[in-house]
Amino acid sequence: MDIQLKKGFLELLVLASIKNQDSYGYKMIQDISPIMELSESTLYPILKRLDEQQLVQTYTTEYNSRLRKYYKITAAGKLKLIESAQDFKEIQKIYAYILQ
Image: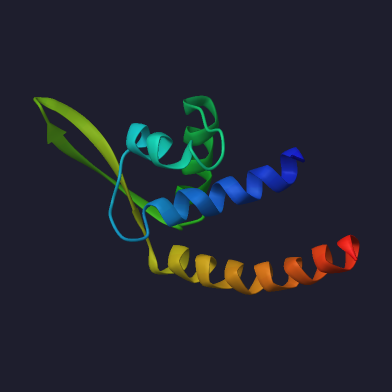
């Protein structure tokens, strides 16, 4: 898959993985990897970008006597997912044309 296309999908997959429940990096990797390959070295720069764009918020909670960083989707992040659904319809039209 084209790296730029994959990058866009990964950002959306990360947002979708925390749409209903806050999560942490390792759990996101477990959730997303069956759909698209994802490593820590790929995930954390994406999370940083999403945080800078205010699409996610972070907070730290203690878990088993260790601090764990959690990610929560923002209203802007939810809006981005809605907009991506509209983009998907346009992409479907493009692929339908290509494959005909």
